[in-house]
Image: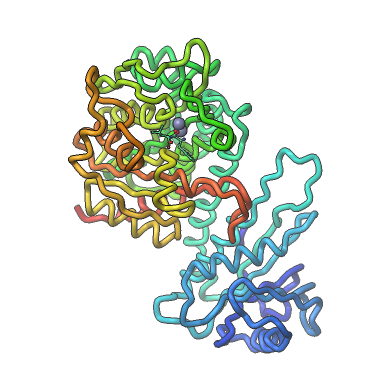
Length: 495
Ligand code: BES
Ligand code: ZN
Ligand code: ZN
């Protein structure tokens, strides 16, 4: 829960009042805040540098139990991300064993021209909301709990002006946290059917139409690639479709998300060191589902359809094998070179289905697709592939805006021959290791028809082993804010 307050800072009753501080410029207009900041900067070794914090307990003439100062770093170098991180840090340092509360002061003084006050406020709201999440459902004892209320301090005019934006941020951040919860859930509690039901239920609560296709239906539809990947599991695959259609919809966007609930690698089984984390291989599915739901809650003008293939890639007597040839939904045959390259197989059916059934103007898929993409871009940046320069630019910009960064990668035509098969229309892997993320993306491009399409490989940023400035260790929920922002900019697009 996030609210705004414009009460005079000295009179705010709260456990913790958080004040962002720069070493070289006072960013606050309130005399109370200015004098407190001066006091803080007089306390060695606090200097207001990035990441520093300092607490003053029960300062005189204040109603707050504690004032917590968070260093931002040099004023001329500040970006919105500094404010997200500072708010996230403020919230994390305010959490304790019982549910508490916090008030974060939004700077209202001198700022560089590109930092608008409204944006500062929403950035701080974002950092605070995303940080206020303690995934400890499985712990018998809860050491730290999420705060019950977060308030942002700003003036009365901003309070009035920002309500709408704040509500949207709250919706999108709840979506991110929902995605994190789904991803963090262990694979023994999220079979394809269980996850489909869970996502469908969340979608229906927002008036989104949810349909779950079972294995019988998938056989009727001839989704041979999705069925092959799911064949080795005791828990059969599903195709979940989330359809948000507003009245008088202006165009259609299709989102496709990889939903491998556990990727053991199949008969090309993953070794120790790689297999442990593979419950997160449905992070694309989680981001897509949460984005469709958030978009519905916000009330976008386009139709947004999430097409989510769900399967468990396991080993058994029924498992698909290297050398098998399967037929995808669009009729193309695929020789299986490696059962661990399963994500592209389930996406092949889903992309072909989405393109054919919904005829979207834009189709975007999101997937924890390749280790190669993590080698290329590391753990914080997604690979962005699209034959459409404009769409690629638009998504990259959305990523900059929300700090879910994606970097443009090529789709070279002459690499397509790496997927050649002697027996079938194509193979699901190339002959060697090089360019693995590109080869995977080129494979997907075979199933998109003429639809304007982009692919995001989120194998790196979907998960973080250590805590981040506004995230606990584990799933990051990467992609929800990116997709929601992309949908918003597609809405404003002149085509
Ligand atoms: N789920 C993995 C990719 C992955 C790796 C996700 C690391 C998250 C973190 C994917 O299904 C996979 O196994 N890809 C193989 C492809 C290879 C067999 C061509 C890979 O990246 O090694
Ligand atoms: Zn795999
Ligand atoms: Zn996988």
